Length: 183
Image (cartoon, rainbow, N blue to C red; front, side, top):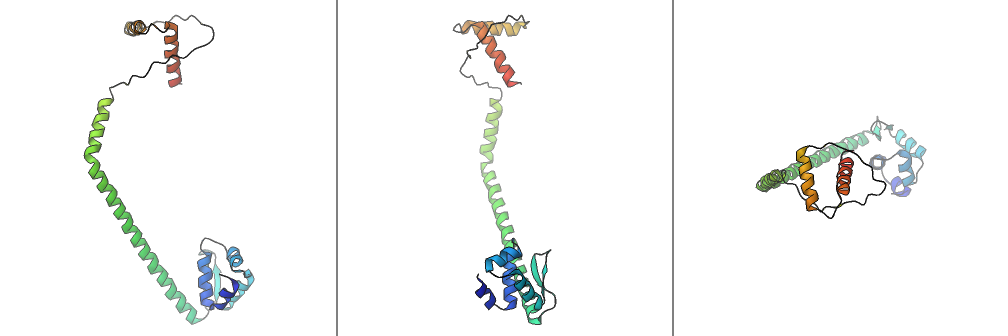
């Protein structure tokens, strides 16, 4: 809206339009958009009984023309009714969406139960990955460690089945993976 269009409106309509433009904005920005000075707006509105209420960020009628007061009350009531209707529509829409989502979950109930059962069965299954031994570099150090019988037996069986790797590489890889996993 430009200055000429704004000035052609009644004072009530100017205030109404200005207040609509003020939503989420400032007086200075709205005046800049219209191309009218802030003091002109303030003086014109004040002369007709309107003052700026900073708490609501809009101009309100404090005792100007009775016709403007009536128009403002009617306008505010319409806005209130529209807001209530919009809230009601939004609430119904949200309820409908929630109902649809719940219904969808109910439809998936058996599939979800089966999926959970399968996952519980898989908890005890260990997936075997391809064995990859890193190429460690540097000097070899000797470290004597004590190992439980059952662990040593499993280790020896593993080494027997993987003769392509050196024991030192297998132990280094196992230590390296363990230490990286549990830093």
